[in-house]
Amino acid sequence: MTLAARTREAAAAHPFLVDALRAGVVNYAAAARFVDVEGEPEAVATALRRYAESLPDYAPSSPSVRVTMQRGLGRVGDGDGAADDGSDEAVLRVNGAGYGPTDDGDRTAVLATGAVDAAFAAAALDRLALADVTVHAMGFDGEALVALVGRRAGADAIRAVEAAAGSVPDRPSADD
Image (cartoon, rainbow, N blue to C red; front, side, top):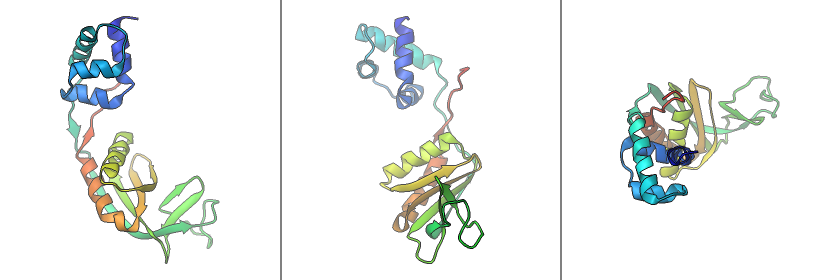
């Protein structure tokens, strides 16, 4: 395997580095040390520069997403997919545990609908972490994303998920 191929492989193991290469915000000498590819650091840095030139530009998209919030959620149902009264009020179900409106619910659900994919979910998790919001549960299906957070974190969470909608980078396909 060539030095260039080893460098591309090492960079691809770190998606944040590929995003930084696409955005043109990389110190190539530091990145060459970071990827830990055997070879002269200058040669690895040159391979990274050439790899960056071959990548599509980093262009955050603004997917069409609507973000809302629902307070007062807690555990609902008996774990078999239905609530105790036979209805299914769960806003989110993870591993048999359902979360929906309850009288004593201490969670808030942030719901994003629209162009919701894995890249959006990753961006939302990143933004929630930066906002120091603990996510208790999360799920998405391509049309909607639900993040379950603490009751008092709802306002920060909704702002974080809204910000994620404007920061989802277009990912290069395997053919690029």
